[in-house]
Length: 286
Ligand SMILES: Cc1cc2nc3c(=O)[nH]c(=O)nc-3n(C[C@H](O)[C@H](O)[C@H](O)COP(=O)(O)OP(=O)(O)OC[C@H]3O[C@@H](n4cnc5c(N)ncnc54)[C@H](O)[C@@H]3O)c2cc1C
Image 1 (cartoon, rainbow, N blue to C red):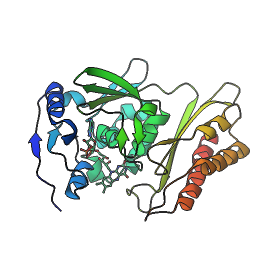
Image 2: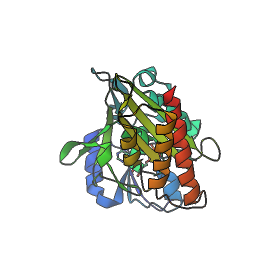
Image 3: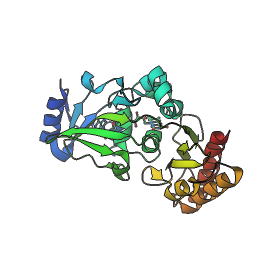
Image 4: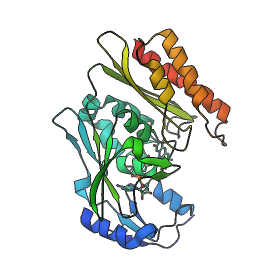
């Protein structure tokens, strides 16, 4: 398949990119690694009239250390760079852990963190990971800059809080609190395929051994990343134990209303979500 006709713009600065996006309105789209957008255009699922290529915008690339122990990651940073970064492994081990699950090396060599987050595919790993890490997204548009907590970024299927003309420029990840541990689990038919279900979790344990705060987000079971609110609440105030983990897994499965499609039925996805919750929490109990 071939895409429909489109105009191609390759700006040299973020300001130029924003101006080009503003000119194009709803018909203009940023192009990052092209690993989702180009296939969608080839299938005519997306038909932007103007493509604004972000390739030359070096100011959107790179991984920087925040003084407080957190990270700032430019939107155009490649998946592969995150996968290989020692800084990411040290400061955001959950991001390092999830990278090999995302597609295949060829795709990770072109795909970007900003593209993954802005695309808002409900089966993508990074939205859930950023959600449990309490990440904040930096956005710039014709009216200036703003920040959006991940919890407020995802509005529905392939839909985000980005307005036309706005660019995601960076992702800020706060430091992991003392006593926090994290895990990621997913099931896909073949390694590198989109997940049938997945779960990202961060658990903060207090000095008394009880869970002080828990963040859990699931992928591929809803319209976007699904925060497991009742599961998180069920973990707080109790030490991670066989019983608390069994309860958490049961609540996760019970609360979900996943879609059925050619890849998996809703019932199978619900079952998987419970199993993956169990596996992820069990790893943190050790
Ligand atoms: C075979 C295959 C398997 C894959 N498997 C997985 C998988 O298992 N898990 C997974 O998460 N992903 C998977 N992907 C998708 C891959 O991770 C993509 O790289 C990613 O989703 C999009 O990143 P990109 O940089 O290529 O963005 P693009 O395709 O260039 O853009 C995607 C969307 O985001 C918008 N966009 C991009 N950058 C910005 C920005 N800075 N600001 C605002 N909007 C922006 C674009 O306009 C477009 O709408 C797979 C892709 C393929 C082809």
